[in-house]
Amino acid sequence: MPNEEWVEMAALARRFYLDDVSKTELAAEFDMSRFKVARLLQQARETGLVTIQINDGFDALESLSDQLRQHLHLDECVVVTSGDTEVDNRRRLARAAAREMKRHIRTGDLVGLSWGRTLVALGEELADLPPCTLIQLTGIVGNDFAQSPVEVIRRIADRSSVQTLSLFCPLFAGTPEAADTFRNDAAVRRILESYRDLQLAVLSLGSWDPPITQLGSSLESSDRDELAAEGARAEMAGIFIRDDGTVIDAAAARRRISVSVDDLMGSPRVLAVAGSLEKAPAIAAVARSGLLTSLVTDDVTAMALLRLPVVRRPVLTRETSTAAT
Image (cartoon, rainbow, N blue to C red; front, side, top):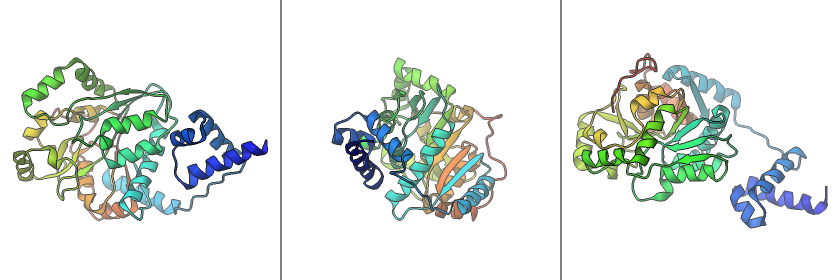
């Protein structure tokens, strides 16, 4: 191998593995295509220039993952070592979720994604997907484009040869009539009708009580009062859920533009990516609902979930889902 190429490969590897610079950024920095960057990084692994060792107590976490899977009555659970900070924790969760997605996605699949800070981090970790279609599962929340589902999909598409379908409307319209207007738009209707063909849905999960969600400012005070009175514990894709796993048919649901309960129940795999000690009751509530098949979380959250009552039988099953919100 020419010495010049070896030096260039080493420089790329340092920036990618040690400085956490993305392949797209490296392509611009080194004035080469993203595909050449990927080839040189792969070559660095194959030649032994880069070696990777993982010391994460895998056996212990594998056992914890299996305990949690059974406790929550899910098909799959992946537990990772918690990070030192919230940002680090989100990055670890995103990496684990990216591995799970790559393990399951096949050519031609329709893959739905919601929004949130952890899924934005997922956009930085997920690359080299097989040809598939990524679809936005919710309308847009707030005015921060960097946290929007459009941005999540864009980041992933930058690193894979995939098609994308975006939903350019709010998650919650101002009135039921406005929501109907959005739903009847041809482009929006096409997205909503596509949800019935989801092979995989990947969602963040928020806690309504205690409030660990970015949805609060998107709803009117009357909505918040109603949800409090109804005992809302968790929200996922704008769907609100009580502690016992039942879905709340609130006024806000009639203004929501997103994937529905039946759409999620019709998907063979629904993966939530969520971690936080305070979110444990919300995660358990969503598990009781039956909407989830899979969970990626951290070990601190997993231990908190194991201290909560076991999920004996979810409210909904994939054979007997009920039409709702």
